[in-house]
Length: 430
Image 1 (cartoon, rainbow, N blue to C red):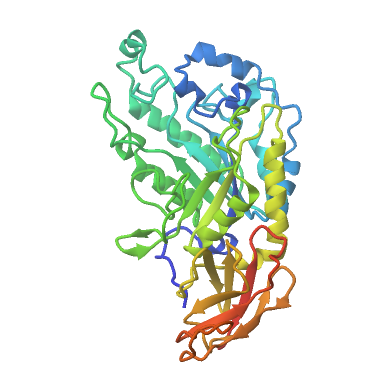
Image 2: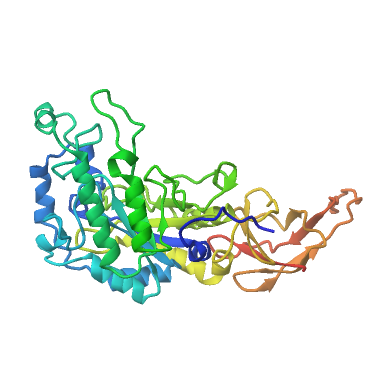
């Protein structure tokens, strides 16, 4: 039987069923169009960064279009950056003037997004940065945009992170009390292990993480919280890499989610051309589910409030594959069977799914499945795949294959199905 992850405090039952979510990184950095860390990377002072705030006017923003696009791609939940490290807020927070309502947009941009995705049946998730490079009480450290400005550092030497923590907790409370049921709280990020000599990184003591977590759990019972407060959480969040296997903590498999970008940036980056092919993205989704995980795939909308055409193309291609192959993803997890080379297994109950990353010539051999499969079919068109169980004592000769004990051989068509990743659905015997 497939393995199960360790129990969590949050309700992850829907999360393990849905498997595929949309990440949205959107803020005034979309106007700069040079990555969401542009303020850090280019060491931009607040007064110089202000031009992006003053010119943020997403006049083409229609979150209903976003939600429909994500639904067509097969996504089931979404997580949006309510506030990134630059401190800009998408909602009408009472605790700051640095928010969407004070830009040329002149409106809360988060509320209609939540409503649009909820109307399409999505679970709702909020990303919220525990970092804030604009807040007057956030101490300067080696990640701060003003890290190399010694005069600025000297003027900021008496900043009190405890006052900042009050602000962080207050904004989190707003997010969890004003928008109905929230299913995921995705904090980002702690870095107390970092040390620049003149400053150290920040972590659980600075954020008062235990108190923050208790408030989150109290306001939204059952909410899933990620692992970036340095006190654990309900899910591990590998970023921009695919784990070699099911992630574990203390040797036990846990709930996890790979967060991945479509190109090389989270926020809109006009000139980043590292767009992943749709086939690669489908393979990443399959790979994650085959190891017990989810995928949170990111889109960085433009400053005018649209998904880039290249992003839409990829989401549509994923959706084409998902339309015929979704049951090899939803509700599936890792299998105890070992797949052949260049393949992945996912499993849901008595249905085992063989995903073929490389199409073999005529035959694929499945170890350990002899006598265990009642029927096999290509999932894209439900066409039967012939099963052969070769006498394990048979010797190879000319056109005769040798047998292998315990193996089931599938006889495949020479022509590869015209889909991103072909899948064979195997119905296991009871």
